[in-house]
Length: 309
Image (cartoon, rainbow, N blue to C red; front, side, top):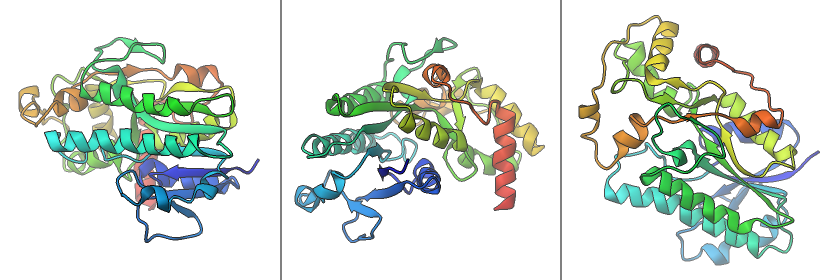
Protein backbone atom coordinates (compact mmCIF):
# COMPACT_ATOMS: atom_id res chain seq x y z
CA UNK A 1 0.00 0.00 0.00
CA UNK A 2 1.39 3.38 -1.02
CA UNK A 3 1.72 5.96 1.79
CA UNK A 4 2.77 9.58 2.02
CA UNK A 5 5.74 9.65 4.39
CA UNK A 6 7.49 12.78 5.67
CA UNK A 7 11.09 12.36 6.84
CA UNK A 8 13.35 14.86 8.61
CA UNK A 9 17.08 14.18 8.63
CA UNK A 10 16.66 12.64 5.18
CA UNK A 11 20.23 13.44 4.14
CA UNK A 12 21.81 11.56 7.05
CA UNK A 13 23.14 8.00 7.13
CA UNK A 14 19.83 6.40 8.10
CA UNK A 15 17.60 8.98 6.40
CA UNK A 16 19.13 8.71 2.94
CA UNK A 17 18.97 4.91 2.98
CA UNK A 18 15.41 5.00 4.32
CA UNK A 19 14.22 7.44 1.65
CA UNK A 20 15.61 5.22 -1.11
CA UNK A 21 14.12 2.07 0.41
CA UNK A 22 10.64 3.48 0.96
CA UNK A 23 10.52 5.02 -2.51
CA UNK A 24 11.50 1.68 -4.03
CA UNK A 25 8.34 0.29 -2.39
CA UNK A 26 6.13 2.88 -4.12
CA UNK A 27 5.72 5.25 -1.18
CA UNK A 28 5.46 9.01 -1.70
CA UNK A 29 8.39 10.23 0.39
CA UNK A 30 8.71 13.94 1.17
CA UNK A 31 11.84 15.32 2.82
CA UNK A 32 11.47 17.86 5.64
CA UNK A 33 14.19 20.48 5.14
CA UNK A 34 15.34 23.46 7.20
CA UNK A 35 16.63 25.53 4.29
CA UNK A 36 13.75 27.75 3.01
CA UNK A 37 15.53 28.17 -0.34
CA UNK A 38 15.11 24.45 -1.07
CA UNK A 39 11.77 24.30 -2.82
CA UNK A 40 11.47 20.99 -4.63
CA UNK A 41 8.35 18.93 -5.22
CA UNK A 42 9.63 16.35 -2.73
CA UNK A 43 10.44 18.80 0.09
CA UNK A 44 8.60 20.72 2.80
CA UNK A 45 10.25 23.48 4.79
CA UNK A 46 10.23 23.32 8.58
CA UNK A 47 12.36 24.92 11.26
CA UNK A 48 12.36 25.06 15.02
CA UNK A 49 14.68 28.08 15.25
CA UNK A 50 13.56 30.58 12.62
CA UNK A 51 11.16 33.36 13.62
CA UNK A 52 9.43 32.75 10.29
CA UNK A 53 9.02 29.03 10.95
CA UNK A 54 5.33 29.13 11.81
CA UNK A 55 4.21 31.29 8.91
CA UNK A 56 6.29 29.40 6.35
CA UNK A 57 4.94 25.96 7.30
CA UNK A 58 2.86 24.38 4.55
CA UNK A 59 0.25 22.94 6.89
CA UNK A 60 -1.84 21.52 4.06
CA UNK A 61 1.02 19.30 2.89
CA UNK A 62 1.71 18.20 6.46
CA UNK A 63 -1.95 17.28 6.75
CA UNK A 64 -1.58 14.84 3.84
CA UNK A 65 1.01 12.72 5.65
CA UNK A 66 0.21 9.17 6.66
CA UNK A 67 3.52 8.81 8.50
CA UNK A 68 6.03 11.32 9.89
CA UNK A 69 9.54 10.10 10.73
CA UNK A 70 11.71 12.53 12.67
CA UNK A 71 15.42 11.65 12.44
CA UNK A 72 17.00 15.12 12.50
CA UNK A 73 19.28 16.36 15.24
CA UNK A 74 22.84 17.56 15.75
CA UNK A 75 25.26 14.59 15.59
CA UNK A 76 25.95 13.12 19.02
CA UNK A 77 29.61 12.68 18.07
CA UNK A 78 29.72 15.74 15.83
CA UNK A 79 31.85 17.74 18.24
CA UNK A 80 33.38 17.62 21.70
CA UNK A 81 30.78 17.81 24.47
CA UNK A 82 31.45 21.35 25.56
CA UNK A 83 28.72 23.10 27.51
CA UNK A 84 27.71 24.91 24.31
CA UNK A 85 27.56 21.75 22.18
CA UNK A 86 25.56 19.86 24.80
CA UNK A 87 23.03 22.68 24.62
CA UNK A 88 22.99 22.32 20.84
CA UNK A 89 22.39 18.57 21.16
CA UNK A 90 19.52 19.16 23.56
CA UNK A 91 17.81 21.94 21.61
CA UNK A 92 18.16 20.24 18.22
CA UNK A 93 16.20 17.26 19.52
CA UNK A 94 13.78 18.64 22.10
CA UNK A 95 12.77 21.80 20.25
CA UNK A 96 12.51 20.18 16.82
CA UNK A 97 10.38 17.32 18.16
CA UNK A 98 8.20 19.81 20.04
CA UNK A 99 7.78 21.87 16.87
CA UNK A 100 6.69 18.90 14.74
CA UNK A 101 4.41 17.71 17.53
CA UNK A 102 2.75 21.13 17.52
CA UNK A 103 2.20 20.87 13.75
CA UNK A 104 0.63 17.43 14.21
CA UNK A 105 -1.62 18.59 17.04
CA UNK A 106 -3.15 21.37 14.95
CA UNK A 107 -3.46 19.28 11.76
CA UNK A 108 -6.96 18.85 10.35
CA UNK A 109 -5.96 15.34 9.23
CA UNK A 110 -3.44 13.76 11.57
CA UNK A 111 -0.86 11.12 10.60
CA UNK A 112 -1.47 7.51 11.51
CA UNK A 113 2.09 7.18 12.82
CA UNK A 114 4.76 9.46 14.28
CA UNK A 115 8.22 7.87 14.66
CA UNK A 116 10.86 9.80 16.57
CA UNK A 117 14.47 8.64 16.65
CA UNK A 118 15.81 8.12 20.16
CA UNK A 119 18.88 6.16 21.28
CA UNK A 120 19.89 3.22 23.43
CA UNK A 121 21.77 5.80 25.47
CA UNK A 122 18.52 6.19 27.39
CA UNK A 123 19.51 3.13 29.42
CA UNK A 124 22.78 4.63 30.61
CA UNK A 125 25.90 2.68 31.61
CA UNK A 126 24.62 -0.74 32.77
CA UNK A 127 27.60 -3.10 32.59
CA UNK A 128 26.65 -6.58 31.39
CA UNK A 129 22.96 -6.27 32.39
CA UNK A 130 20.64 -7.46 29.62
CA UNK A 131 18.28 -4.62 28.69
CA UNK A 132 15.01 -4.50 26.76
CA UNK A 133 12.19 -1.99 26.37
CA UNK A 134 10.88 -2.76 29.87
CA UNK A 135 14.19 -1.81 31.48
CA UNK A 136 14.43 1.38 33.49
CA UNK A 137 16.01 4.54 32.15
CA UNK A 138 19.57 5.30 33.16
CA UNK A 139 21.45 8.30 34.47
CA UNK A 140 23.66 10.87 32.80
CA UNK A 141 23.38 13.58 30.17
CA UNK A 142 22.54 11.28 27.26
CA UNK A 143 19.96 9.29 29.22
CA UNK A 144 18.17 12.45 30.35
CA UNK A 145 18.35 13.90 26.84
CA UNK A 146 16.67 10.78 25.41
CA UNK A 147 14.05 10.77 28.16
CA UNK A 148 13.04 14.40 27.48
CA UNK A 149 13.21 13.75 23.74
CA UNK A 150 10.77 10.85 23.92
CA UNK A 151 8.46 12.78 26.24
CA UNK A 152 7.95 15.44 23.56
CA UNK A 153 6.98 12.77 21.01
CA UNK A 154 4.25 11.20 23.14
CA UNK A 155 2.34 14.48 23.33
CA UNK A 156 0.93 13.62 19.89
CA UNK A 157 -0.30 10.14 20.83
CA UNK A 158 -4.03 9.62 20.33
CA UNK A 159 -6.55 7.06 19.13
CA UNK A 160 -5.69 8.15 15.59
CA UNK A 161 -1.92 8.66 15.87
CA UNK A 162 0.34 5.98 17.29
CA UNK A 163 3.77 7.06 18.44
CA UNK A 164 6.98 5.03 18.29
CA UNK A 165 10.26 6.11 19.84
CA UNK A 166 12.98 4.21 18.00
CA UNK A 167 15.87 3.57 20.38
CA UNK A 168 18.73 3.24 17.93
CA UNK A 169 22.05 1.55 18.61
CA UNK A 170 25.30 1.84 16.65
CA UNK A 171 24.39 1.72 12.97
CA UNK A 172 27.10 -0.11 11.04
CA UNK A 173 27.89 1.04 7.52
CA UNK A 174 31.04 2.02 5.66
CA UNK A 175 29.19 5.18 4.58
CA UNK A 176 29.47 6.82 7.98
CA UNK A 177 28.58 6.50 11.63
CA UNK A 178 30.74 4.57 14.09
CA UNK A 179 32.16 2.05 11.60
CA UNK A 180 32.85 4.70 8.99
CA UNK A 181 34.92 6.66 11.51
CA UNK A 182 36.82 3.57 12.71
CA UNK A 183 37.79 2.12 9.32
CA UNK A 184 40.64 4.51 8.39
CA UNK A 185 42.52 3.85 11.65
CA UNK A 186 41.97 0.10 11.54
CA UNK A 187 43.08 -0.08 7.90
CA UNK A 188 46.36 1.51 8.95
CA UNK A 189 46.78 -1.04 11.73
CA UNK A 190 46.20 1.67 14.35
CA UNK A 191 43.02 0.25 15.83
CA UNK A 192 42.50 -0.98 19.35
CA UNK A 193 39.91 -1.31 22.07
CA UNK A 194 38.87 1.57 24.32
CA UNK A 195 39.52 1.36 28.04
CA UNK A 196 39.37 -2.26 29.21
CA UNK A 197 37.22 -3.11 26.18
CA UNK A 198 34.62 -4.88 28.31
CA UNK A 199 31.87 -2.34 27.63
CA UNK A 200 29.01 -3.70 25.51
CA UNK A 201 28.11 -2.19 22.15
CA UNK A 202 24.59 -2.66 20.77
CA UNK A 203 24.79 -2.53 16.98
CA UNK A 204 22.58 -2.95 13.92
CA UNK A 205 23.37 -3.15 10.19
CA UNK A 206 22.14 -0.25 8.06
CA UNK A 207 19.97 -2.48 5.81
CA UNK A 208 18.32 -4.01 8.87
CA UNK A 209 17.46 -0.70 10.51
CA UNK A 210 15.89 0.51 7.26
CA UNK A 211 13.79 -2.67 7.11
CA UNK A 212 12.92 -2.26 10.79
CA UNK A 213 11.45 1.19 10.13
CA UNK A 214 9.33 -0.28 7.34
CA UNK A 215 8.29 -3.10 9.69
CA UNK A 216 7.09 -0.55 12.25
CA UNK A 217 5.14 1.32 9.58
CA UNK A 218 3.21 -1.72 8.35
CA UNK A 219 2.63 -3.34 11.77
CA UNK A 220 -0.05 -1.14 13.26
CA UNK A 221 0.04 -2.85 16.66
CA UNK A 222 3.56 -1.55 17.31
CA UNK A 223 3.73 1.57 19.44
CA UNK A 224 5.85 2.97 22.24
CA UNK A 225 9.58 2.37 22.71
CA UNK A 226 11.23 -0.09 20.32
CA UNK A 227 14.92 -0.99 20.41
CA UNK A 228 16.45 -0.89 16.94
CA UNK A 229 19.49 -3.05 17.61
CA UNK A 230 20.69 -6.47 16.50
CA UNK A 231 20.21 -9.59 18.58
CA UNK A 232 23.85 -10.01 19.58
CA UNK A 233 25.54 -7.04 21.28
CA UNK A 234 29.30 -7.46 21.65
CA UNK A 235 32.00 -6.00 23.84
CA UNK A 236 34.26 -3.31 22.46
CA UNK A 237 37.14 -5.79 22.71
CA UNK A 238 35.20 -8.34 20.61
CA UNK A 239 34.28 -5.67 18.06
CA UNK A 240 37.93 -4.66 17.77
CA UNK A 241 39.10 -8.23 17.23
CA UNK A 242 36.39 -8.92 14.60
CA UNK A 243 37.06 -5.73 12.63
CA UNK A 244 40.83 -6.24 12.67
CA UNK A 245 40.36 -9.86 11.55
CA UNK A 246 38.13 -8.92 8.62
CA UNK A 247 40.63 -6.25 7.54
CA UNK A 248 43.57 -8.60 8.17
CA UNK A 249 45.24 -6.00 10.34
CA UNK A 250 46.61 -5.89 13.85
CA UNK A 251 44.74 -3.89 16.50
CA UNK A 252 46.94 -3.43 19.54
CA UNK A 253 46.88 0.32 20.17
CA UNK A 254 44.65 0.50 23.23
CA UNK A 255 43.13 3.84 24.14
CA UNK A 256 43.35 4.00 27.96
CA UNK A 257 40.33 5.23 29.90
CA UNK A 258 42.32 8.00 31.62
CA UNK A 259 43.25 9.48 28.24
CA UNK A 260 39.70 9.30 26.88
CA UNK A 261 38.41 10.93 30.05
CA UNK A 262 40.34 14.07 29.16
CA UNK A 263 37.61 14.82 26.61
CA UNK A 264 35.25 17.63 27.72
CA UNK A 265 31.95 16.86 29.40
CA UNK A 266 30.87 13.26 29.91
CA UNK A 267 31.57 12.24 26.32
CA UNK A 268 34.10 9.50 27.13
CA UNK A 269 32.11 7.95 29.96
CA UNK A 270 28.76 8.05 28.14
CA UNK A 271 29.77 7.37 24.53
CA UNK A 272 33.09 5.52 24.46
CA UNK A 273 33.32 3.67 27.76
CA UNK A 274 29.64 3.21 28.59
CA UNK A 275 28.29 -0.36 28.46
CA UNK A 276 24.80 -0.84 27.04
CA UNK A 277 23.79 -4.46 26.32
CA UNK A 278 20.43 -3.99 24.62
CA UNK A 279 18.16 -6.63 23.05
CA UNK A 280 15.51 -6.08 20.31
CA UNK A 281 12.75 -7.79 22.30
CA UNK A 282 9.77 -6.05 20.71
CA UNK A 283 11.10 -6.47 17.18
CA UNK A 284 11.59 -10.18 17.86
CA UNK A 285 8.12 -10.57 19.35
CA UNK A 286 6.55 -8.86 16.33
CA UNK A 287 8.16 -11.28 13.89
CA UNK A 288 10.92 -9.11 12.47
CA UNK A 289 13.71 -11.15 10.86
CA UNK A 290 17.24 -9.76 10.78
CA UNK A 291 19.24 -10.19 7.60
CA UNK A 292 22.56 -9.62 9.41
CA UNK A 293 22.57 -11.65 12.61
CA UNK A 294 26.23 -11.61 13.64
CA UNK A 295 28.96 -9.01 13.63
CA UNK A 296 31.20 -10.79 11.12
CA UNK A 297 28.39 -10.87 8.54
CA UNK A 298 27.70 -7.14 8.76
CA UNK A 299 31.39 -6.23 8.68
CA UNK A 300 31.91 -8.36 5.58
CA UNK A 301 28.83 -6.77 3.99
CA UNK A 302 29.99 -3.23 4.74
CA UNK A 303 33.51 -3.82 3.49
CA UNK A 304 32.35 -5.59 0.34
CA UNK A 305 29.98 -2.68 -0.39
CA UNK A 306 32.88 -0.28 -0.02
CA UNK A 307 34.90 -2.22 -2.58
CA UNK A 308 31.98 -2.18 -5.06
CA UNK A 309 31.27 1.51 -4.65
